[in-house]
Length: 183
Length: 172
Image 1: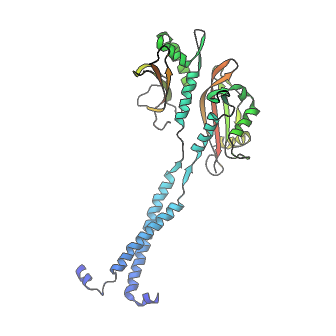
Image 2: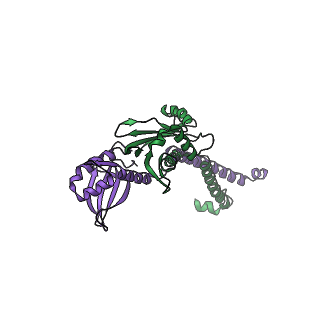
Image 3: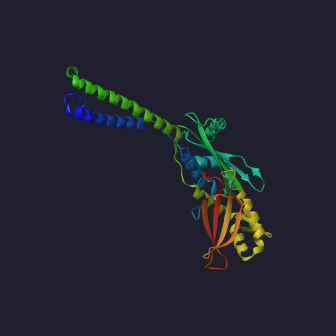
């Protein structure tokens, strides 16, 4: 049957060239559809982990007035908290704003820092980075609105620190809550 | 176009080509829709950093600077470790104070805890292991080291290893 079909050239309604065209077009269709999906597929890239980590590291390792700084040696001691500065809420919040700059109108990030003295089991008044936005966003965060364009993602980390007081160093913990709105 | 319709053979052939293309388009489109549909649902790409070793290194330094009172004398943890190496009677106070500090470190998972090992170098001999958590089938995370000079010896020194013991592999 096949031999007969092949011998009869006139009966060939699918020539070799046509067959090759089918393969070519199939290949082109496959590539075109693949490219279409690659371009239009919904990609979700979550930058919150890295953004929050950068802000956290800026708070923890920056010379922002929070940590003990030896001017003579020009050396910063991350982990040893200057209690005098921490107690001066206005000064430390200004210092944090200067050292972590997200533009004049900061709508990128906010943070709350809560210090606790382990020995006295005493919690001090919290200080804020971008207080106005923090208090606005925290309600959304607490309500669990973390997804979508209006959502705010957040995380809290706890750090063991030494608090430099007049009587010397005392152990404490610093809880840092970071809030970042979705874009 | 007229040529094709007049040429009966060409008309049949091109119709078959069109039909095959249409079927191919449908099949390929369906396959990619399924593939990318699953991929889109399953994969949310997280861009994260690897700065935890920096944080645990800072934790270890802060631990070593933590003040303690031993028999009315004020010193820091680094001194107490040194003292313990020379005299075992400081073992209880070293373990007690260290556990107090290690327990105030952040625990990222419910079953996780910070442990500290002290080794005598260069022999690599274990001096003490202080564990706040001991479980079977655990994972070691955020490991960091620090070296302490040993008082009374210029050749020997102490190596401290701080790590987080986790039951779950996903704990970081």
